[in-house]
Amino acid sequence: MDQIQAMKIFIRIAELESFSRAAEDLDLPRATVSTTLKRLEQRLGVRLFLRTTRQVKITDEGKIYYQRCLQLLSALEEADTLFAHHKNQPAGTVRIDMPHSLARVMVIPALQAFYERYPHITLSVSANDNSVNLLDQGVDCVIRAWPSEDENLQSRHLANLEQITCASPAYFAKFGIPQTRADLAAHQAIGYFFAHQQPESHLEFVTDGTVEKIPLRRTLTVSGADAYVAAAKAGFGLVQVSRLAIAQELERGELVEVLSALTPPPMPLYIMYPPGRFLAPRIRVFLDWLITLFSQPDA
Image (cartoon, helix red, strand yellow):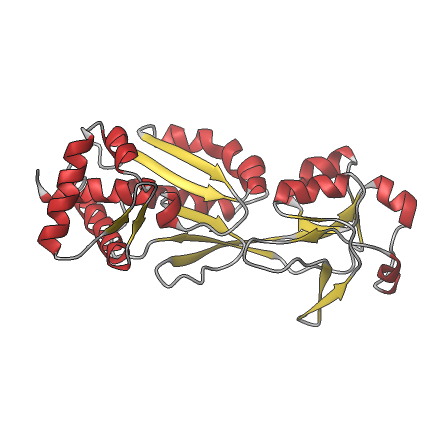
């Protein structure tokens, strides 16, 4: 079996953490996958995976080799499309992970336009609000509201989304409508936590270019944008979310904006992907499409 095929087999084992699943995904006998990986490790002189009866975990050397394989195969894919008659029609699957709210209200509703332009690309969209390891999850890129701290990833700023302060009519009927910053002392906020952070229940406002945090009491803490909005609609407290994410709730009156004179900081969005000089055409055109989409969020 040639080296390129061996690298593809190695990549799928790394992403799926299973020899059997990789063999099924590639439509190859499991014995072929195992033998190929064994010969690859012998040729490289390093162990790429730690294998037990229950799991397959990539080694540090395997992670380095994985990144290099991605770069090399992307470069080959790029070269193969240089002179093809369909070079402007890249093909293949792009796997992306993004927050629930963005998938629901912005990206998925706009995908028909992408498919009309790139009919040979298949998208696999997963929705998740926590940190994602591209290697562990087997995705090509992720969108998050914070830049990556992983030096193995490249981050690109997509947009700054306007945020507002709001709550449900039922909440305001019980606690009153805050008119000033001082009024917030009598109110509560819904707490939010990420997998890698401590729970927080404060509101943020920009004053003279400085972000001021106002801590409020909380009775409920959630994880995930959809749960955060659902808790607000149920009357558990004030929240600060992007206007885009709750446009329908605002229109239906399920959530009501308050303190419009006090501006929360915008929500920055970043797209992250493995670094390298070459990106596969299918990934590059999708990234370019996303950048265009987020440059005009009102549309």
